[in-house]
Image (cartoon, rainbow, N blue to C red; front, side, top):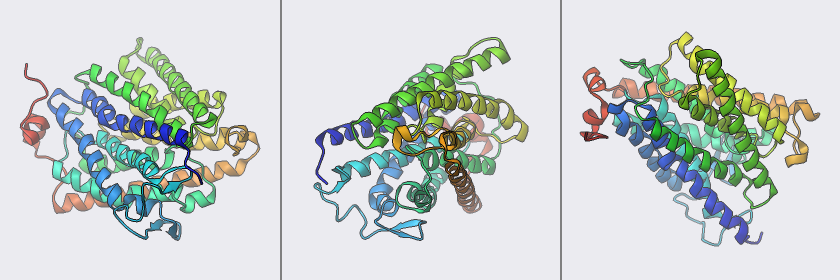
Length: 402
């Protein structure tokens, strides 16, 4: 292959755009949704998770996830570690391998940051740091290999354009596992202390998601353009459908509903972005809003789990819908793969296998890691610290001086 400077330039931009989704996107989004006394800690959880995974990725994560050799399709077999053996002239396709690895790094770090939304206000910093190290090693890296690095799901024919498996379903079900171990907060009310922060964070997410999905074409071409447009369409439809549900149920639209709906739509379109037409993206966006709305306002209350910022309800379940919908609406005219409604029912079955495998593995291994840490060191802060607020108790800082 010959280096494409155009594709390389686009992928560098896309990498920076995805970086902005975590720092500052997730930080502001979660920080604004949290209680005033936990705003800094909520932001810190996502920041430290991204930093830890960034280091692990260049130490061994990339090599295990994207090795040329695979152990039974479950995990890569690297030849070297610490990015050794890769030069500035090494290519993956027609872009530098360092650019490809950097783009994938932002996905890994973002996924870890997303998980933090389920546990804000009640988890020890040390426990979170160790959890992320173990989770990235034993959950994210293997699943990433399965779907993108030559693993068994990729070989089975599962299609996931930009992260329904490794990012969305993985983060959602990992978050659910941690939330169940930690138990309910002392005050489970969701009273965002600064929706302005959350709107800013949602804006960074929406902006960065265009690099997230558009960059997954790995080229500056029409497929990237299509992925960006269908992603924006799904987000817009999901926002409006969520607001309609707000009005139907509460008599008024809410800003919180608007940004939550948009994120749900972006989550659902992520695996499908490079495979579906605009009509498919609109159905996917509408379905995401309905599914996540029901999860946030009905399923969570019915089963009593305390997923503080609805990572499972929005990322997990909209991610499941997005992967299934990819098997329904994928059009061979877009990217050469057809789904059920375009004459290929087998693709839907393969997508279901990918969904179930990811759900079971990410939840089970995350639960084992969390439970082991809880036994060894305890995951949850003391009651007095939770009531006082983690900004003060864990950091001796305050988000505000007035």
